[in-house]
Amino acid sequence: MTSRARTAERLFGQEISRLRKNRGISQEELGFQARVHRTYVSQIERGLKSPTLAVILKLTQALNCPAHRLVGNIERKLKN
Amino acid sequence: MTSRARTAERLFGQEISRLRKNRGISQEELGFQARVHRTYVSQIERGLKSPTLAVILKLTQALNCPAHRLVGNIERKLKN
Image (tube, rainbow over the protein chains, first blue to last red):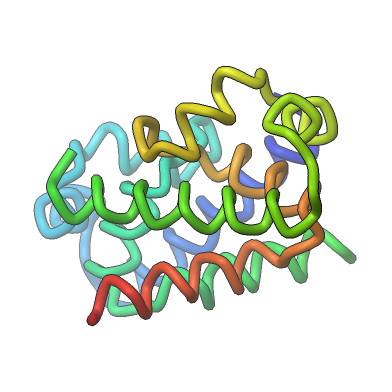
């Protein structure tokens, strides 16, 4: 992965963590709702894994946030 | 992967293929520009792989299409 990619993953993780905390749910609960293993949620939030399109859609759906909005936030932050 | 995910991958592949053909470049050229192996581009376009966030950003950047717009197109089509 390039450093740009690593940054994108870190930004994605931050966005997911923020949305999850806004909803007041644990990583375990988010994992359950999104059908993603809780250890994977933890890795995603820390930017250690590059989420697949499938996981991006599952997590954002569970968090009631359109995936395109979250991706747009990441693109904006990458430009700055 | 769920069937919803497989559909998302197929839609993503169709969008990438469409954008690439609009630009008149081969899978090999897109792979070169996006720094993704051409066989991976081929698998992505056929919906056989779920692209990571890193790959989504690399391919859309190489195709001069904001990633959030492409993801938004996929979300709209998944709803229909």
